[in-house]
Structures are given as structure tokens and as C-alpha cells.
Amino acid sequence: MKNPKKILIANRGVIAIRALRAAKELGYQVASVYSTVDKDQKHLKLSDEAICIGPAASKESYLNEAAIISAAELVGADAIYPGFGFLAENASFAEKCKESGFEFIGPDPKVIDVMGDKIKAKELIESLGVPTVPGYTGQIQSQNQIENIVEEIGYPVIVKASSGGGGKGMRVVYDKSELWDSIIGAQNEAKLAFGNDEVFIEKYLKKPRHIEIQIFGDGKGKVVHLYSRDCSLQRKYQKIVEEAPAKNLNQEKLDEIQNICVKACSELNYKGAGTLEFLYENNEFFFIEMNTRIQVEHTVTEMITGVDLVQAQLLLALEDKFDLDQEKLKINGHAMQCRINAEDAETFIPSPGEITRVHRPGGYHVRFESQIYSGYKVPSNYDSLIAEVIVKDGDRRNTINKMRMALTELVIEGIETNQALHLKILEDKGFQNIDYYIKYLEEELIK
Ligand code: ADP
Image (cartoon, rainbow, N blue to C red; front, top):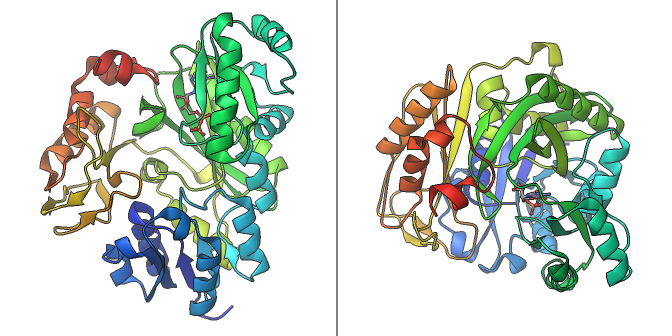
């Protein structure tokens, strides 16, 4: 590899500018790709090179593997940074990067492949000693067979697509009379959405919290955890507010789960950043899935540990450098992130268009991760996430106060955002007392 090394960022939006900053700070050259509708993205102006890879439709641009590999060849990149979404968890793309001589910044394609299949992931993780949600991952042979199995598990259950993601392809079943139709429906939906009709069944937990563990491995068996995050404030299975560390739960069990995650990922020789997601109910943790990439909420972990996770990813991939030491990783304070989406705060209808004015919040331990600027046009083609407001303070109560201040200061004009919803969440007693669960927002806060 030459010096300075060159990284191709194969993404857009919030994570593209985050990765660009991390790479530039480390002295790397950066090349970026964009679709025609994204030609005015801020990170492109800060990149050494920018290559157009196709039209607005993701399939023809950010999901276009050949176009991205060609761009990497054209600029002479050493490594490809996938970020989150798009091709970040696509094992065959990771493999193609390797075959074409580029370092894919992420774990081994085989690990991505297993974890991308929820059935395989669940079976593997269970075999490594991690507790999972009770359920059935075997073959679905007949209506009778499956009705008997679900009778054993007990209603309600959730039917999930093995290749599902982004909260899609899941159906809750409360009663035997709905079971078979739900399975067939889920299979058809999964086939259409993911090209794979495999589904499995889990006990449906009624009021769980979503707690996840951030891990980081050197790819040779050394793995550390960077503690927990609480991402229970969700809408339609999408996270809205995230914080670290998770509080108001059984600390002993949490410590135990963190160590179990480290052990399991060490057995997998896990490389880079990864997250094991759990549902937490009645003092028990149940694994649901592993994300083999950086996550939107990685920022809150950075705030409490002082580790720049994106730089750690780059240094491991490009320099084979890994200096995370469990003994030295300590929690400092409490961090929270509010995802700012371009959508109406009440109807949740997407609100693309031109942002006429932006004022970013500031202050001690206030962070604003975003590509937006006055005059930026939010395209209608992609995810509605346009910014992340992240704050840290000594304890959770002060962190909430700091977030309230930051959101009050934030101005985004010209489009609708969910800023007002966040302020409502921060005022809620249930939220303040950590007395909420994954459906709390929909069932109690905004019903
Ligand atoms: P995806 O990959 O689509 O994000 P997950 O398996 O991570 O799917 O589940 C997404 C969300 O769905 C979880 O954060 C949780 O809110 C809910 N969920 C998943 N499994 C269950 C379950 N067994 N019981 C209750 N809720 C669940």
C-alpha cells in the first residue's frame, strides 16, 4: 500500500461525513462516491476525489457493487468503508472487495454471511453460550406441525424473516387461528423484499427493552466490549433515542452478558466493530441479532469511553493497529443521541426538500453529526435521517437537561423534522424514570 493510504467511502449522509472526518484526521486520502441527486453532499467537497456512481435509485448507485469497485479502481483506493445501510452487511460485496484487492473495512465475509442470516446467527450465537429468545428456527413442514410447536412456545409469537432487516418482515401472532396465514404472508413478503422466504418463530416479548453491547475485535481472537447502549425508544422498530450506558437494570446480569459477548466474538475471531442486540425483560437478556458494522448509535459509546470507533476501524483495517485494552476502558458519564429525521413530528410523513436555514447547537460535550447546511436539499430517495444530536454529562438527569438545551438551540428551517417529538420525549416522566419499553412511544406516548 502507498502512503498516505486512500479510503473510498461507499456511503452518503451522516456516516459519510463522519468517516471522512475520521479518515482525514488520521492523514488518509479520501475518495467518495455519490449518486446524481447527491452531488451537493458536503463530504464530497472535503474529499480528495468524488466519483459519480449512478442515478438516484440506490439499486443503481449505492447498491451498485460493480460501480463502487470500479470507482475504487479508478482512484486507486486501498480500502473501502461501507458505513451502515446499503452494502455494509453484504457478504458477497465484502468478498468482491477482497478479490479486487481492496481491504473491506469490516469483519470477515464469512462472519457477515452468518450474521446476516438470522436463523444461522441465532443458532451459532446460542452454541457459543449466549441466551436467545425462546422459539423455533427449524424447518416449517406443515400447519399441524407448526401449530404444535407454537403451542409449546406459547402465544403471542413473532414470525420473522431470516434475511429481514430494518424492522421489516415481522408479524406478531396472538392466536392459533392467525398463525398459518401469518407464516405464509411473512414468507411471501420476505421472498419479495429479501429474495429469501425463510422465516422463523420467536416468543413475542410484550414489554421488553432493547439493550445492546458494543464489541470490537482484532480479528485474531482478542475482543473487548465497550459497554452497553439502551435503544428502547423506537417507532416501528426503528430507534429514535439512544443512550449509553444502559441504566436501571440488573447490573450483575449486564456485566455477565458483556463478558459472554466478548467470549463468543473471540471464538469467531471477530474483526472490527460489532454489536450484539438483546431484548431485556424480567431481568433476563435474550439475543436477537448481531450487526457486523458500525451503527448509527456508535456515537454515544464514543462519548462515554473516549474511543473513536470509526478511527479504530480504519486503524485496524489499514495499519493492523489495535490498542483497545479492557482494563483501560472505563465509563465516563452518560451520553444520549437524538436522531433528527426529515419527517413530520406528528404524522411521520417524510419531508424532503430544501433546508433554508440551519443553526447547529453547541456547548461543552454537545456534538452534531450531519451533512446538512443552509441550502442543502434533502432527497426523497433515501433514509430520512439527516442529523444526530449527541450530548454527554455526568449523570442521566443532567444529560437530559443538556439534550433539551441542545434541541432548543437547533434550528432547521424549510422542511419538517421530528425535533418537537424529541422535546416531548425528554419531558415524559416514563422516559425520565427509565420506565419504558420498545413500543412505549407508540402505545403510550403518542397514542
Ligand atoms: P431488524 O433486523 O429488522 O432490526 P430485529 O430482530 O433486530 O430486526 O428486531 C427489530 C426490533 O423488533 C427489536 O428492536 C424489537 O423492538 C422488536 N423485536 C424483535 N424480536 C422481538 C421479540 N421476540 N419480541 C418482541 N419484540 C421483538
